[in-house]
Length: 155
Image (tube, rainbow, N blue to C red; front, side):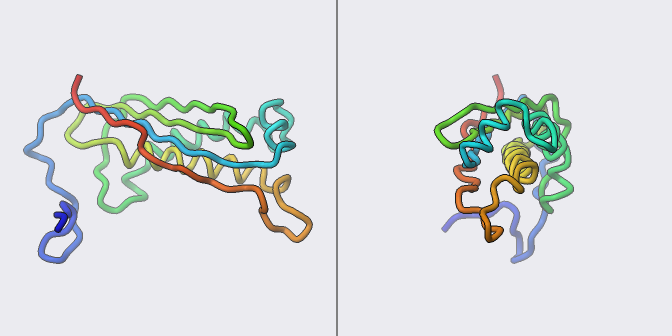
C-alpha cells in the first residue's frame, strides 16, 4: 500500500521539510486547450476583442505559480526563482508549457501544474463568447492533457 506523506494518524498535515537541504529544483508542466479554428486564428492574429489572450494567460500563469500555497492547502510557500510560459500552435489546439524553478527544500510540481491550469482557464475565459454555440454550449472547447512533463532536482 502506498504511503501518503500528507497523512499522519488519519489526519491531513503539511509535511515537515525542515531537515531537508536546499537544492535547485525545476518542474515543467503542459496542457492543451482545443478551440474552434476561427478562435485560434483570432488568438494567433491578435484580433480577440478582450485583448492579447496569450499575454494575459502568461500573467495569469505567473500569478498562479506564485499563489499555489494559498490555493492548495498542504503546499509549502516557496521562493520561486523563475517562471516561463510558452505557447505552441497545434492542430485545433494551443499547447501551453510552464517551467518553474527555485532553490529550496521541496519540489515545484504543484506550482507548475497550477500555472498551466490557470493559463488554460484564462485562455478559455477570454474567448468563451466566440466558443459558445447557439444554445450557449461549448461543443469544441476542452482543456486536456494537463501533466508534469519533467522534473529536475539538483544539477
